[in-house]
Image (cartoon, rainbow over all chains, first blue to last red):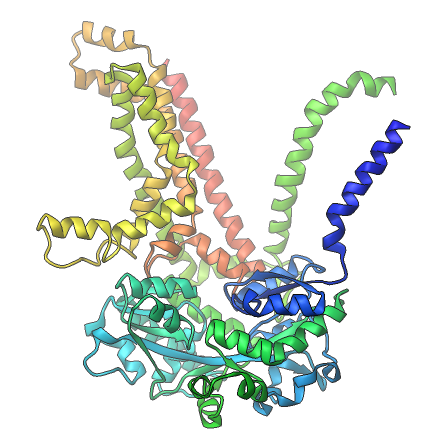
Length: 348
Length: 288
């Protein structure tokens, strides 16, 4: 009798302790910091009855290993447009029912036209936010503001230059070499970019790998010029009273765009679609714009919830700006050649 | 039933460690070895049996380069730790008169091990930085006029940080080895007319060699596998082998190559461990 009681009691405790995890209304998102910020997620949780657990990634390279380690953990992910195709090809994500997403038709057509989020006529990613991989300099360090990528190769700035520790370094060096078709570089062009980066290496103070690290480098007076995720690190630095200016060099800049993707066979489809609807609505679009300083993918929502100044500052009214960016593309089977070139620069 | 019951303690005593070794060592190593023969193929990799990954490691100069750099850094860390740890341990064991002070100082060496590794590495950033503690100090005493950027984000910073972090692993075995040496041996050596230096060279140092070997092994292996220090205080020329492995498993999504690198690294570490083991045995049998 007592054993039975104890057992029932134990089961009860077990049931109680596991209940929140098994509840229908919980979604786990694997995303960038800021994309599930309490400033707008709390309102969503209250209105929808779905609670949100966020896990943050530090780079696009984190998505595949995390999902490979076993399924069933995450319901939604937000890779950038150079990684979305990989997620589709790895069979980690499922096609979206775009009819169930209210704001779908308000998304910039330019984003909906991108190959990286589609396969066989179906959409796998919902464009969410975008921006440029701009360049940035410390105001005090320059009498004449830098305008070109050549400024990142200047001898007199030796030990004061930083570059993102990412395969995108190849894109930067290729543009400096005058090779503008940066996502379709030939082996010779990649080798030339690699050589340019090796030549630049003695001038580099540190390759930065996280947003916080770059902010620290500027704050500690270690570097004066670098590339940056436009809008993000510069606002963190502004908050610290470090005066930096972003610029798009003559050689142009890459653009990125992040999309929400639904992980294959998620049991929480209902909450997942509620979440997608919220993220593409004014709440989500202005939420991420306010927290991260990124531009919104839904121009209509942005117009409604942004101040005119913010709307202009984030280039929402400026299609030419968006067109000028070299939006990241999946490298598919060329990916290895690019990463290998970058790794070999770092190995030197 | 009764046989099992009679042997149960034995089965448990032997079974648990065997199961542990099989589950947490042999199986993972087996998986890594298997992966190292696989083939990278977009989007991931496919099962295969080929030596391409190993051939890449030994023919592509980038891997050899990083490997040699890692070797250099690890050796420098071991030497620096030894040069600092030996006199300290020697002083503690033979010269420190107060037992309380000795315990206290010994604990002071061990205590940092309880502080997060990450935090200790991070602190060196604030010490060595351009606007860091060291530069402010050197400027305040007038040794330099403007902050130097020579201290941080290079191999020097990595050696300093790793030495600081791993030095307890050099102090502990040397201290233990020195403590075991009977004082009457040194006294006998003095009675036979040896000066303190010659006594040290011919008696104390040889007897403490097993501890030194253990310390070298520990600090070398720990530095050899480190990837946080290059990330935090290393510069553009600071990539170590563990960073390359991390990149292969992450950014490059090339687990086969990463596994092959890990196996090569494992072989190096095992070689060092068995060499040091042999030295320790030799030291023991030759010493007493």
